[in-house]
Length: 256
Image (tube, rainbow, N blue to C red; front, side):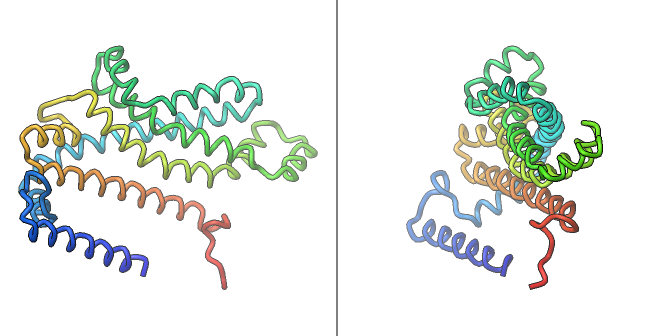
């Protein structure tokens, strides 16, 4: 049922879409039917797949940097209430500032367009990791904290043996959010940068298709971005399940 139900809904939606387009004779340069989009996806696969790879490469690098940087920053914030109060508001400001507003500045300041794209994607992706992991580090059982202190455990031992394991579900939850946001950040940055040529991501293919009124290719590129986002989410969900399935209540299989 987990697979059949959404597949059935998807088939009904695509069938209704195709029927509406055909019955109303909607031109393909306004709304193409899903069959035409699928044909375009196959015929333009070489161009679109190379752009998809570039977008995924930017997404992967930005996501890895966000995961590592977010984890390190969360650990730093959790060490002192004063440090957290001093730095966390700036992380919030960076997160709530629209990336499309600051991306042009980053592209101007950083002459290397590739690095500018990665910075933009990283800004969008790192906050969920910081926020969730910080919450997880503060969620360690206070009774266990008292026990560690009673036995004279060092701050390093408390961090490695208690706080980090307690924060693991929160960290993995932040990664699930961060993965999709890294893809969004990479696409938005590509839009703003407007990079062209063979070494361009899917955002440029969408812009190019719009300028040429090649709407089926635009839809095909959008489909690829959506499928890439779903794939990233599924992979991170699988990782979360594998890591937590043996010991955390959220993933342990119940007997009843």
